[in-house]
Length: 114
Length: 111
Image (cartoon, chains in turn orange, brown):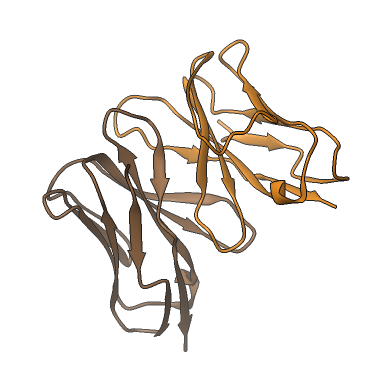
């Protein structure tokens, strides 16, 4: 078990471009979460999947953001027409949904919009 | 709406000393998490507290939960430099899987 894997780890993009991040959760974890963290702040919830179903979305997730988990395994988070305010670390996490339900976070994907 | 507050926001402590970080949450929560984050890194899970009166210990860190007071504490015993990091508590909303984080406590341990 290699933990939650995210890529790319770093992305620099020009304002207005689209970016996509990928998350591979711990195998057999049916729950997958996306969070966003800016410098000096705690992570903010974006969205959550149970298997392939997207069950919750934050109001932070504007129309420019979309997340998918097509087969209940990996997930993608796409940001369209990026803005400088999108610069942040995007964190993916997963959990098994049973027992103590520890939620494990990946290393994060840093986005810089210039 | 569930809100989580931590204090202090910043803690500078001498090696060997003890201190406590406090985490208050505003509404009923199913469980409480503590995480550690080193600069530029992701979040490392420390503790998951599931019920009132739960206490967990790992090395120099001990976490407890009082659901009636909506309070969790992270106690540091005989601090060492390696504990320098930012510590977050996070509460799971009632009947939801949305984890709400506090603002974090930045801990610096000096000789």
